[in-house]
Length: 218
Image (cartoon, rainbow, N blue to C red):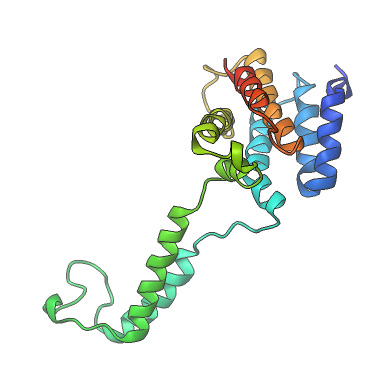
């Protein structure tokens, strides 16, 4: 089967939109489409799932012009470890006997306290951040359709599709339980419906929202 036959008009429009608005993801989308058109391609499900996951995770940052920030726990904890060893020079092993004194009388130096306080702050902020799928639906929607009542079911539908692909990103030892062709294509088309909504500057009226939700329902 010629993979280009799966580049329908809608998919060509989506590809052009990616090239203009999210060029770093254009090749990923085109590759996924071409793989959808090649049922005989080895590890096809695995590869398409990786591409869909990466597009879904990175698209909010690309559209918002931001870079997703991750809390670099290892680097911060290395700094805390150095300060900790200065305060407790005999605590070479952080087991039950790490600090041989009554902990109720321990006073932390200000630099160590500030590092711990900063780490907790970053951790709380990372917990408060919206998930990528939530950001896609909240950042650009007009106020009248951005209410949680309307956004929540759209996010849920998109998350269900993304989670389906997430479960198939890794190769498995067993051959049983592999989705059939129809299931793969259907989930990919549901994923594309969300992209079409984003391409169309999200949803301009309630009717469009209802239509998309009905389309993505199994």
